[in-house]
Structure formats: structure tokens, C-alpha cells
Amino acid sequence: MDHEAGTSQVHVLDRLLLDENADPTNLPFSLLQDITNHFSLDHQIGSGGFAVVYKGVVGKCMVAVKKLSNTFAVPENKFHEEVRNLIRAKHKNIVRFLGYCADMQGKMEEYEGNLVMADQRNWLLCFEYVCNGSLDKHISDASCGLNWRERYQIIRGICEGYFFSMRRELFT
Image 1 (cartoon, helix red, strand yellow):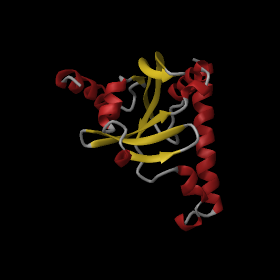
Image 2 (spheres, rainbow, N blue to C red):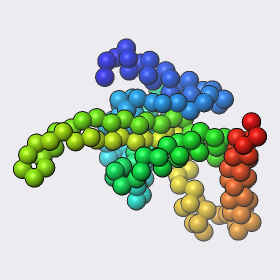
Image 3 (cartoon, rainbow, N blue to C red):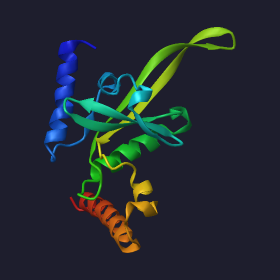
């Protein structure tokens, strides 16, 4: 990555992290690749059926970068809908969504003995990093010390946050 271009891209992410009112934005694939050390295993912090989550380092701050896998199994409009929903969901009980990347590049691949140009989709979502780990593990783990009332309050707060952000969108 060009140092000057890379520095200005990092400044965009720095601004998003510092300004809680900043709107999520389109982030370049090269930036997300750079801050996760090319999506290295050392930066991997979680994985699921459709994505791998990496820790991204932005100066002294960290972000979570969710890289969707098997993107051709997911219709493009579903990804767009997810990004729209994440942009709308702003509440103290919801991890802050910082940005997204929808990048497509041609890549030479072998197919039936021939080299062909194939589209490679890169769909990524970038969130504020939360150091306590995955919420589902936190609320379902008895060793975390939360009683059922506290767990209910957390779940209710998340639902209220999502409902509030959706309602705000409908009436504005």
C-alpha cells in the first residue's frame, strides 16, 4: 500500500473511532487488509459459518473486521440489506458499526484445465472492538457470574436498542 494513501485511509478509521456521531462509511479493502496483517491467523479472534473475525490495529486502537466467506452463496441484496440495517442500528447497547467493504476483483483461476478470469468478492464489516469477547458466550457461560436477571437485562437492552434504531429510521 502506498504510504501516503495508507495514512489517509487510516485517518478515516481514526476519525470514525474518535467521533461517536460519525456515520459508518465505505472502507477500502487494502486498508482492512493492512490493519489485520493480511488477515493473518495471529489476528483471528473468531469464526462462524459465514465469516471469520479479525482484530485490526489502528494506531493505538483496535477494531473487529468480519470477513465474509463463501460470498457467492449469499445473494448480493442480502449483504446490502445487512449493511443498511447495521448503519441504522445506533444505540449504547449495540456494538458500533464503523464501516463496510464491498470489493470485487478479477483473479485468474484454473477451471476444467483452463485458466479463466473469475470474480473474487470481498465483503467485510468493521466494528468497534469490544475486549470482553463474544456476547453469546458471555451471557451463556455460568462462570461469568451473571444471574438470569442480569442476562435478561442485557438481552432486553440489545432488543430495545435495535428497536429504537429501527423506529428512529421509520419516523425520520
